[in-house]
Image 1 (cartoon, one colour):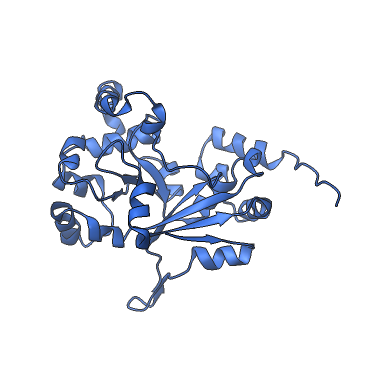
Image 2 (cartoon, helix red, strand yellow):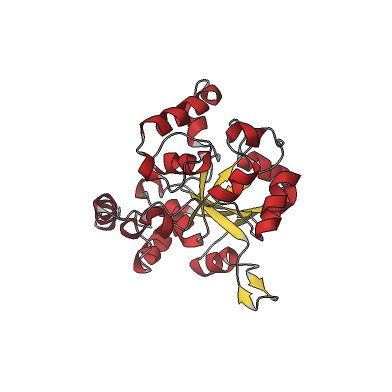
Length: 265
């Protein structure tokens, strides 16, 4: 997998938007989605995996109980994939992993915690268009019929009604699922999820076996303050990405926190 260490804000822009030109469209349209990590050493583990213990055996129980107790009106259609997206959105441990179509949303999560400005961050880029080349025939046929690059809850449901059905389709593929617009947070974060056909599988391992599908950008610790300040100027903040009073408070708390003075050279 290609790994690039950027040294400036301008270089960061060039690398984030590299290869976005589509001559057939006469437009810039990136085939990559983005995930930001505030520590470059982080592995791309799911919230279900971070639960620990025998998490794989708990997956179905967690989702079944969530569907049992959550109000039916919370999803547009009663399907596993809508419920799974809703559960992830409300912090239930799932095998879904957050990504965004927006490189700036990913940069926000690299720099949202000033307490981690002492370490390098990273942005993962995954080519969600070429990921289709590794899909099982049944999934690929559904996407081809729709003419799409990522799945919705509806289209994924045509090929696999639930997690067990998805797992039976194979073990060497990844799915990108675009959630329904449940609220402003999903819309503003330009969100999508990755999904593996095994609760124990990790997408960073899978991308490592298919390095042509991904890149990883290293954001040096010394660049993080500049990135953060410029994102704030561009209005890529908690107030926008987490609409409501919690997001507003998080933005104000971070924005008005003093920066530690530099040591004299």
